[in-house]
Amino acid sequence: MRSTYLRFLSLARMASKLPGLPALDPVEERLLAQLAAVWANEHHPTVLETLRIDEGISPRTVQRRIEGLLVKGIIEYQNDLTDQRVKRIAPTKLAEQYFARLDQLMKAAQGGQRI
Image 1: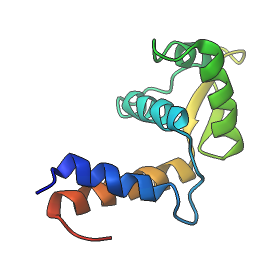
Image 2: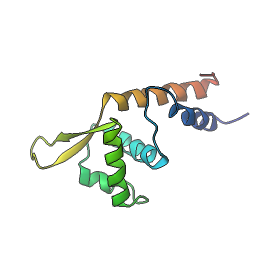
Image 3: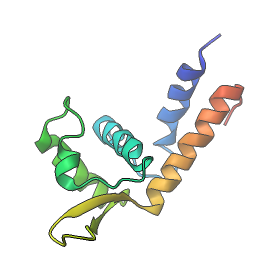
């Protein structure tokens, strides 16, 4: 029997091919997952904070992926409340749909259900 995690990974790979959700490359998925962990703590990181969010990805690569996620409508910039020069990164409704879909896939993997 396959593990729940392996079932989830298999289902999650299919999620990026579903209509209505933009295709993400592996680095974008990794960056988005790390941003989600920060957002879960009710914090919207600055662009500068995001550039250093993953030691395994160069800041230039992170910057390019931020730009890609902006174009795909997954994230948006928000002005900082205290300093208008600072831009914060926040999820969009599309990001919420993406995470909701992953949540459904995780539940399906746990129950051994087919999607």
